[in-house]
Length: 91
Image 1 (cartoon, one colour):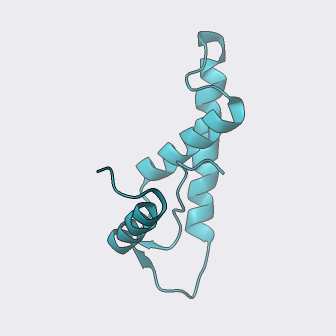
Image 2 (cartoon, rainbow, N blue to C red):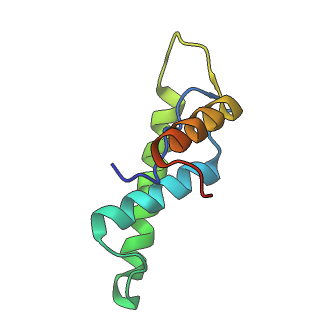
């Protein structure tokens, strides 16, 4: 999976439409191989992004879990700690 696509389910607050759109864009970029499509492919590219975003929103709205929602700030701090351990500090 593309490293830029982050899990969006079971967070408080729930994933926004902007987050879902960004993940959809990353997914379509990954599978198409285009960072930016040519003019001839632009309409198909954006249509695919919108279709993936709609499917992702439907998925987010219908998934069910018994787990407590995760806190975004805590998850960000955990990721920073993992990155620090993995890559060290910039200094």
